[in-house]
Length: 186
Ligand code: ZN
Image (cartoon, rainbow, N blue to C red; front, side, top):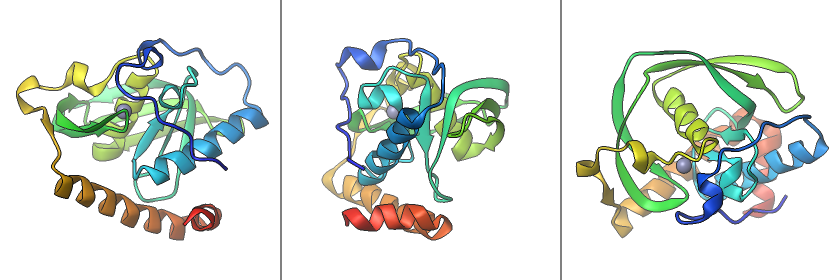
């Protein structure tokens, strides 16, 4: 499973409205597997298909409980309001405060094309909203409070990667096949 190149700020693919996935196929599952690898290598918590230059409506995420994917995600419900700091693998090292819903209910399809509904709160809810924005060509800097935007120092970036690696180890322990996939690259 190759690690894909992540599209960076300025590339037009990050600004398009992505198309729905019409059929979940082996090709979709290959893309998702590659996106898991790419997210893990970049120590990210989420990655949307347009970030690997595939303008389709799907994203992957991993907050430490094993990687997962949602295809054609839609909000069923959004509640509350919370402000927290975000960054994006397509705009490395930039962070800023973004207001998001505190709790969301998302529906979509899983890797096998089965209908799913996932309720998320706090950090996971934030990841879902950030990644779903990507599918509409919206970036966190569009929503961030401009006064809070700042670049991470070398030390802060190292800390972010370190925390990401620890999260990946927890995820690998939670999902044995992810552990095997991760270890083959280390
Ligand atoms: Zn992002």
